[in-house]
Length: 70
Image (tube, rainbow, N blue to C red; front, side, top):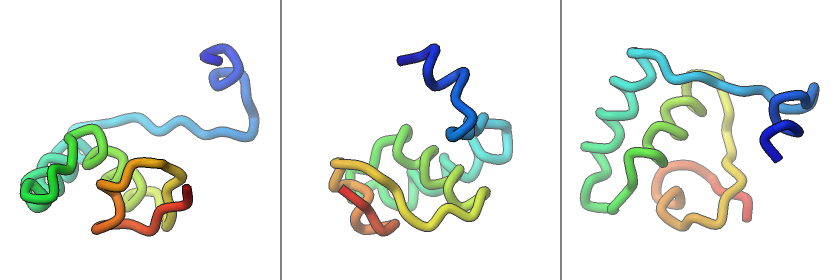
């Protein structure tokens, strides 16, 4: 699977820099009562930075923040 992801021309990889990390930390703290994980908060921060409107996931913790396709 890893080789497929790394060699795919259809997928884009996004990397976490300090600004994304800081946004993720802010989102994580903002939704602490929703039990949003820091990993999910990081996904949301990356979505916002890159203009991604929907997430494909079975994780219901996204529901209170971004539209989810499951």
